[in-house]
Length: 158
Image 1: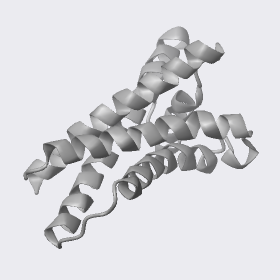
Image 2 (image 1 turned 60 degrees about the vertical axis):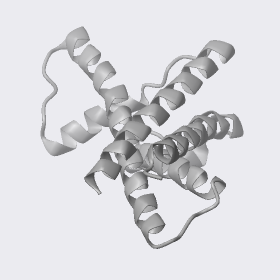
Image 3 (image 1 turned 90 degrees about the horizontal axis):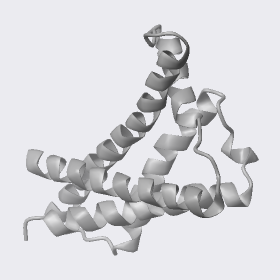
Image 4 (image 1 turned 90 degrees about the vertical axis):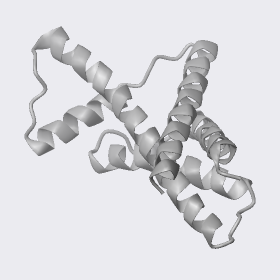
């Protein structure tokens, strides 16, 4: 079980790399800037928890600029570990889902864990997003689900 969890964490890291690459490619192709939402979320969570981010001015902003994407990496690793644990438990019970099902579910879980907190903390409201915003968010998360699932499957005990 612990080995499956670790394999899932590694799979989540691989999926996160794919998600980041797709996001950076989108930024390069469309010439769009990076989102400040991740660091805004880190700041909001830290403020709500009464945890100060050290530094002032640029130093503090640079810390937040690092912590925002780092939190996304953490989400990706945790979702991968959880996915491998669930898929391993299903496999032990003889349940095998058709590949598109876990790919979409894994991608949707990562997307929800990224987007729902933005709404809860008042940083962004996905209900107000345009179609292109949804596509720019959904495609990298679907790619995350695909790479995470493929890595889980590739590292399973046969």
